[in-house]
Image (cartoon, rainbow, N blue to C red; front, side, top):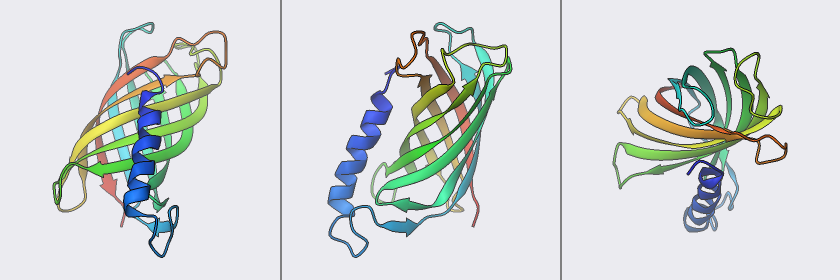
Length: 174
């Protein structure tokens, strides 16, 4: 799944969720609703594929609203070798069972990448998509493991792509 698979799953799952749970409501299929804004911090490692393993710190802010089932987020990461990524996109969260504290969340984001002397992903526009599986406690704190992929979707001739595995803590801001 080291390609756009997570982004495709986000769209498919979100559309199915939208049809089942959001269309026909007073807000409509993509109606705006308030959700708890969140600040998340992740630490992990770029997996060895074409890039050498290296640490990465990633922070994400999930905005306090969504449209239908789709949340909105902005993120920033810095790699051990100076690599920088800044982007924005959508999220889709699914609880793993009725009243279960376990969940999964997919994200798909587009952003700007600067190798800054580190690993070159082929160009300044890079897409980040992935999955997070975690636990949300009664206070709303989330603890999870995430996996994501970054690449330029072959809009540049060089498209090595990288994968990252991270431990994440997400803090509710309300």
